[in-house]
Length: 108
Image 1 (cartoon, rainbow, N blue to C red):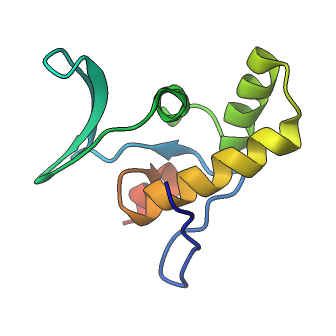
Image 2: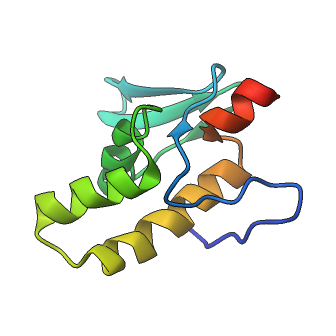
């Protein structure tokens, strides 16, 4: 995925963000393709295994910081390195409307 930077009208992803897929987006396992896909009206995204793992953790109950902590513990990896990979990926998905911040969704 290419890195997307936030624009003034786009929600900036921080470690305090509680991200979730909007009601119109679904993460599903496609048996025909034998892979996970994100279904959005008129669009399909095929995330890699790492992205699927991160998306499964973005259920609105955890902050982005907690997602990073979970991954750093699981992979016994440097937290800053994980954050440096996770936050830009999530920012891109927010920019493409595949994810939304719960706080933003409840006000919008």
